[in-house]
Amino acid sequence: MIAGRRTPRPSLLARLLARLTALPPSRSAGALALGLLLSSAAHSAASGASTPTLAADVASWSDGLAALDRLDEVCTRLALAPWPSVPAVRRQWLQRLDTSRAACIEHAPFLATLGGLWLEEGEPNQAVIWLERALLLDPGQLGAQADLALALAALGQGNALRALQEQWRGRTDIPPALRARLAAREIRPGDPLPVVKLGGSPPASGWAQYREASVLLGHETNLDQSPRLAELTLTPPGGPIDLPLLNPLVPRRGAAALADLSWQLARSPAAGQVVRLGVNLGARGAPNDGTTDWQTVQMVASLSQAWAPWRVQADASGSWVGGPLSEPYRVGRLGLSVERQFNGCTLRSAFDAEARAQSDTRVQDGRTLGLSASTQCGLWGTTQWTWGLALRGAVDRPIDPERAGGVQRLWSAGLRLQGGLSRDVRLELTARMTRIQDDDGYNPLLEDNARRRLNQAQLGLELSRPVRLPGGRAADALVQVQAVRQQSNLSLFAYNNFSTYAGLRWAW
Image 1 (cartoon, one colour):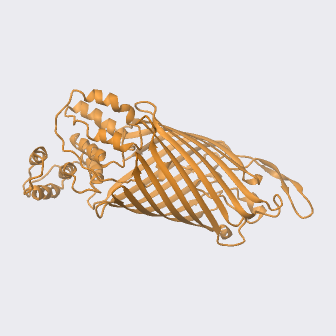
Image 2: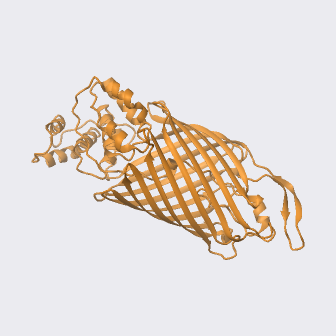
Image 3: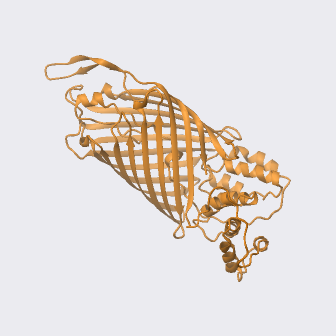
């Protein structure tokens, strides 16, 4: 397996030459990750008081808005900022929070504040999405409860507001400002409510949903991950033979388009517990070389449980990958992970089991067991940057003992650095080294049946900046650059690729 993908291993040399597989490039960590870890926290009730220092606060905190994972410090300050009552300032603050949503997607107070601002702007449909999510882990968040009831009432579901008013009728712990907020919308049974039609209906089943899409256009220097070979040296028993190739292998370069769509659902059936479901679709198309196109479909599910600083998560996924040039295959995966917060860092360890099934060449099928450990921390001396380290080891065992190379062993290490370059521009740098080695010789006709070794280096860069689409929808403008270099003692498996893409990513 190479950076989350396997290298095809046909058992015959002719099949090797015929099936130089083109697999989808590795995506950034946020593109397929279900990972909407919705944590519990209290949402402060809106005071309604304006503040003359809000503009200064926006300026002083703007550089921190692009930080991804120092959530306890940056996202909490955003969530607890003085509530703006002047419409112009409120819209400015809403836009700032909306551009920081991806960074604070795991922060419940932030999401509750974002939902409250959308409600104040007269957008209850948007408000319901984020308020539902903020309440997933802690149904007792009073401010979010009130805002959600008001948002549902504005969408024609007055029963939610009436039920909350009845529930709070005998309580003495409700802040006066919060009770007054509900009283301002007193509704008698049977009274009609205005219905705001914004192109969708609010979730009524307790499930929160999150949808994200991206479209990128760019260029790759090696669309089919091909080596550059004009001849091949064979090593039969009679001695080596240099075999010129009638059709030399040359990387195919050209323009391409990437498209991704992710739909994720989450709910909390019990305190500290979150169930997540999702589907992810991806495709790459090269207009001048359609044989290198590929498509992926992935179904994911997970169950997580939090105990104080610990969180345990079990997850399962099923994937299908196919395309004209590569043989379609299916991958099933089960995983179990444990993570906790310690000294400002998120520490995580995980075990995973994977099964791969080819559509035709079943001799390549295998089973993989892996262990991994990772950490993500704030960069020393700043709240705007984070760094992460991930290590993984795995063993891939063939189902058919005749599989070329036999057992395959993998080791990988990855680094990630991310943060804000300015008030709007965010940078993410990634580097990964992967080493793979077969236990048995790959083929008697190649390098005297040498055991195959692969060393792959990946470098990636992503720049993003929030923009507004027609109609006022928020999005991120992206520029992605990736360089991949794979070396091997068997020249058939060595290749280089350099890709650049630019486009948009948006959520709703």
